[in-house]
Length: 308
Image (cartoon, rainbow, N blue to C red; front, side, top):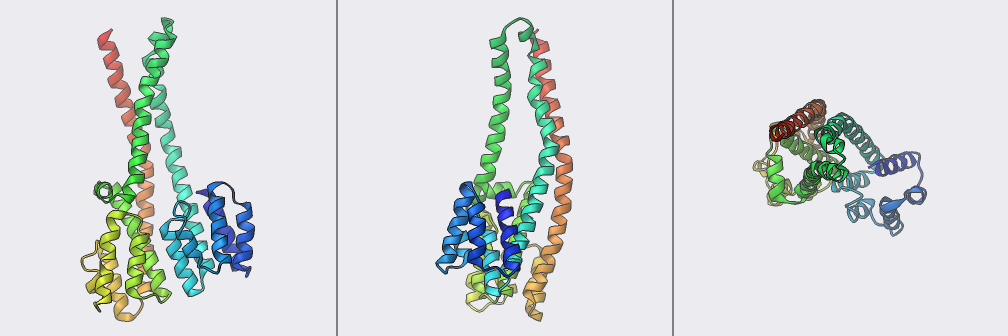
């Protein structure tokens, strides 16, 4: 969301320049419009009341993801809230660039799939059956819109539904990327909270909630009970769905007292890997979309020719 990125960038710059939080929020909330403007004003009200910014952000989840709120909470605890907002702004900018590249590469095949309905049904137009032509075009387009809408709905639903999310995360390639992205958020928040000196059990619970997927939140939150009972991080996180590098980072960090640093290094490595895989996925999307469009057009054309 562009409005959120601009808000984060402005807040990071102002706080880094020494401007008080309330003054910075006064200026930024006055400029923000729409639903995000309401969320920004709510954040300002929380600051005026002396409440943590993270609490105000958590109360507006539609505008501020839980991951963002927890990173800001860690920044507030360690006195580095300006760095937290700067990091979030950089992440938002990268997400915008990735979404833009994906859209630019997929839009052409989608347009081809839409406008393929014209030559297939051109005979109706030649015969002067304008109503029939329009109906045929809509009959072609509506299923495409339904599939796109259903895909979007499933995507939104999957994050809050354990059952749907489990299925989506199990998909080859895409599911692995989504899972690793969620675990990256988990690692970033856990490292930040540990660096801020938060109790390990509380940090585990907050990091689990910041993962962003209901299917992962439960398994990632379970270690909190073991940590409260006195278990080490290695023992507590043994049943959690973590990749080997994260387990090694927890073990190494616990031995040396550098959990945040060790986990942060592995998170950086995973982020670089995700960027490479994301570029590969963006590159192959138009090929997949074009092949699907070609198959659909060919099948319809063969059906029309067969009935002629």
